[in-house]
Length: 531
Image (tube, rainbow, N blue to C red; front, side, top):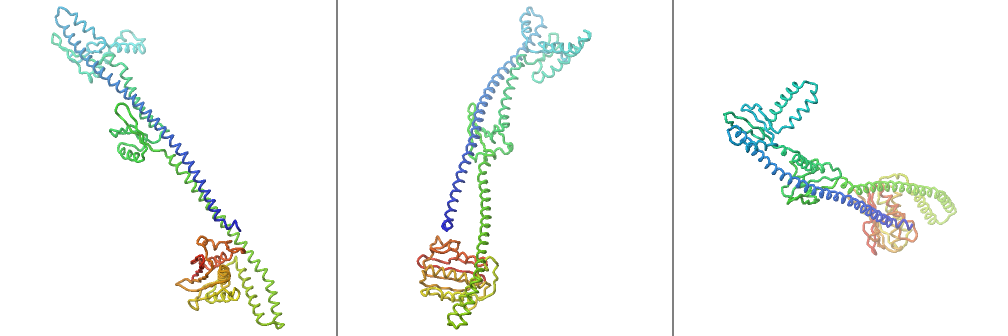
């Protein structure tokens, strides 16, 4: 029985080991989560460094673009001045001069600014520096009209060039108002021009395209980076959102998103080019959050499963034990039947031979007692029948029987609040319960002391209090006294109080407990039954 007595310690030990295993497992799981979380932070920092470098490149490209734009703006102004000088030279050509060499030099000097000259009705008269147009028209004629006559080709060429010049003229007018030339004989001409061929080279266009591509890539890389957690890149000074990959972002909820991410405390400051700086607010991925709570949920589910399994197996084990004890009790009752019948026959023989009547009466009492014990054992494992009876008489009968069978040094008293209290009970089982508690009290006093049994009623409850002045029960043992196997005696099964608990709670729907106990002063057990 020693192992059974120490089962509580084993339970505590196993629970401690389980808690230790869970703690180690959780520590290991959280350590893995921290590593994965740190990798996400490392990726954000790497991306932040890339953002910084790309920002510097964008800034450098912008500066170069601005410088080139300023230079080309100056060139554009220079082209206008050249066109104005060229127009003045054309006017001078129409005047009688002794020396036209300077004027001619000015006219010849314009070899890069495309010009179209029209009359005052804007009919095209001539054009300059549009050789690319002539080349394009000639290529078209060679491709599509190579088999046509030359006269037809020339006619098409003149028409195509005229249409193209008219189109150029309307397009050029948007950015460059035409200049007016006053001829010497009173007529006027219009000079349409566009920027020089150098201005329209692909250098500025390519640079502008590169700059726009860098700016687009700056945001596209953030949005299309599937390995990056949700981030919000904000300008520190202006508070504007530079870039973000959050799908729920729009211009109306920027402030709330920034506040939400700022409250988490996860951010990285990035020094951009010049005096600018930005801050990257980020939140960890949903997978990290799930990984944090997954071990807890997992252990909860496992623990719930283990608890259900434990309760199920405990129920099965208890049911099996009950069946074993019930079988043993019924078998004991069956085995007692034969010797009791023999005793009854022998006692009748003694009476017939004239044996002292007091002796045969006591033998009959013991035989009745044996019959009662047999009856009690036979009822274990089956539903006991409850009958309305006077509990005062039932308890008094049990106490009267015990008085003659316990030590004379034990003063056993019975006190009832009233002579009659009706309760539904099973007489044999209730007497058995009272006897077991009284016998335990006698053993605790080592057959020397006082026991007082009191029956009282309070509203709908009846109380049977069994008070002794024995050794008492330590506070840490009070909950164990009703457990099977618990005993303080060197010999014994420790089943008496366990049987009492079953009789009172399972058969009579009542309660039995230690009302109070003090070591060295005694113990009071209380049986509580419903009226």
